[in-house]
Amino acid sequence: MDCEPRLFKPLLPAPAGCECSNSDCKVRMASAWRKNPEGGWLCNACGIFFKTRGFHRPLSVILMNRTAKRRDTELAKNSPRRKMRRKNKIKEIEESTKVEIQKPPQLELEEIQTYQDEPSPWEQKEYLKCGLYSIDLKLNDLQKNSKGKDKVKASVEMFPLPTQYGQFLITDQRDFCIPWDIMTAHKQGLLQKGFKKIKTNIFVDRKRKQDDDPIVCNCKPCGEGEIGCTEECFNRVMFYECSPKHCPCGEQCSNQRFQRKESVKKVQVFKTKNRGFGLRTLVKIKKDKLILEYRGEVISKCTARKRMETKYLHRKSVYFLEYDKGEVVDGAMCGTLARFINHSCAPNCHIEKWRAPNGEHFIGVFASYDIAPGAELTYDYNFSTFGGAQEQECFCGSPNCRGLIGGKHRSTSINTRE
Ligand SMILES: C[S@@+](CC[C@H](N)C(=O)[O-])C[C@H]1O[C@@H](n2cnc3c(N)ncnc32)[C@H](O)[C@@H]1O
Image 1 (cartoon, rainbow, N blue to C red):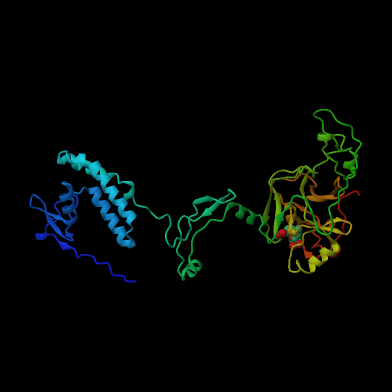
Image 2 (image 1 turned 90 degrees about the vertical axis):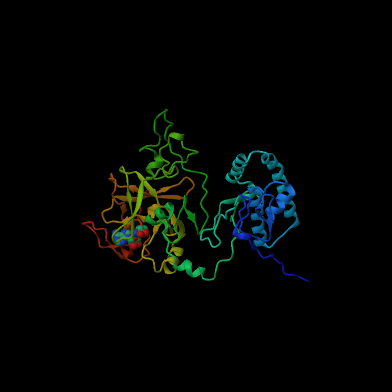
């Protein structure tokens, strides 16, 4: 295909070093120069315009021609449709400015001034929303996808990044802020590998029991404003929680603390000097109050041993707690904040095991006496943890410290009357 190079006429300076006598144009270089009736010089474009229309080329047409010319040159495109559009625009402007031409020159100038102040929409510049190599992709434009959900789309299509960009990302140092929730979780030790809070125990080696024949107490339904199932409640004495469906006291039953999740909410994980993380209370806790339920994965002792020999082989902390005959709660991977409670030989808490109406158990940390705000919560591991782990040196710091936690000294007795 023959493809002749496009020839541009060389630009000539105005004769005698002057400029285009159209006060809106004033160019010094043009492809040709033409004389106006007064004897001055007009550039080729203004000369032709004046000759064909009888008035000077207005500023808006000059600007539009310049923009179009520049765009044409830059993009090397010359579509006939665009030419038509430009011609039509020029016609429109001619129509609108013809009347103004009749006005005295002073008025014409004012009119043109307003053109300059308020550029027409086709003269307005479009700005890129994002740099070519912008570090942060702008994700402002939300578009709906086929399912009607918001779909994020970058505002501007990006060029591929230069090859050295990876190096830049590695070496670039920028200030950043860790999101509040992540920072808090980190401070509370919740970012430990794989730890997740759960709302009920997870049964790994068997199914959860679904006993639909709960033990019902013989308390009498109480009057309005009274509290049911107090100290004398047969279930309470036996460390059984009443069933919400069957208890004669109904809504007034006070023996459903685990099921109603009546735990102390204002507790805080903190870093201890030599015992890893610990848990402290931010509020005063009364004697016998349920502080937290100890939840986790309910596994057989056999699974627990296997885990200790594999998964937890190099772990310093142990999170096993006796659950039932031959079963253990493992709070290492998932559970509640109770897993952060450390051992003390002079503890302020103890563990209680309560029977749930479905035949399973609730294991809770209870206050052994009134605890002041800010105090670290502790219980004696030797009475409640699973005795399969190695002995560890005790750093509880109490005057009657036994020196060791865990190992062979452990007993499995938990406070329960089963
Ligand atoms: C259930 S975790 C308690 C939370 C643990 N401190 C943590 O950072 O996750 C039990 C582990 O804490 C440490 N620990 C608890 N009480 C301790 C004590 N009095 N002295 C030394 N280490 C203790 C031991 O490593 C133990 O295996």
